[in-house]
Length: 247
Image 1: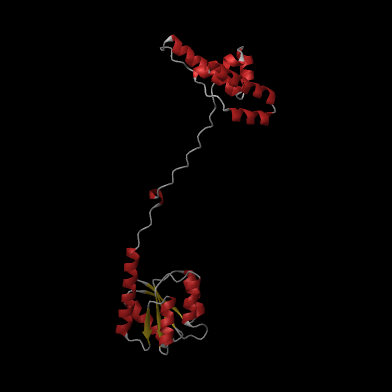
Image 2: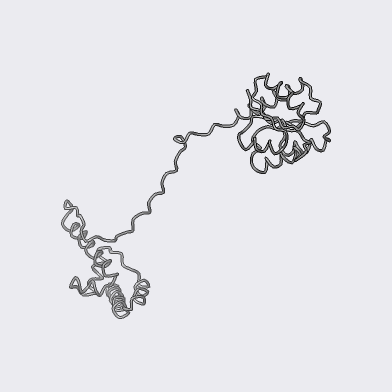
């Protein structure tokens, strides 16, 4: 059975509705004006409200607007009046009223309207999907961590010793020169000093091993940024000389 709030300023109508609805097994609370109806709605939720339109303090349509604006119009409302116009009934329906009862209210009309309204509300409630329990709500996977920065060639590496001697030696030398080039910022002069090789011979060696050298424009830009124009331009000259000799 339902919990119903009856709002009407006429004592006789309140008593009549209370007896009829209570005999039907409903729990009924009474309010004689809008102030008492506001207080009752603040205390609890109702399954249904029977609301008179014409009341001395605040009319039922205004109270309906208040409930809707405050988010309290969560229950079906049946408007009641003996003098309401069609325009008033239409306005109440537009605001959110489910139905309209004209006074004097007959027993048959009252029970039919109440039962139809409650049944319609029950069907609407059942058609709504049930909320998922907290444990069944899928959690978003955590964001993937960014890839670690490329550390460049490492000072300690593992080499495959099952290769032929020449291939194993080339692999070691390539890793060796790549490591020192990265460490020295691509400076051929510094790598030549480190390894004890002439720069032209070093370039030819790197080219033979397939070491990826910084483009000339990149070296010149790096030289301008680091203030090492002399060494880097010498590197370019050595590369150009080595390319010319090979041709």
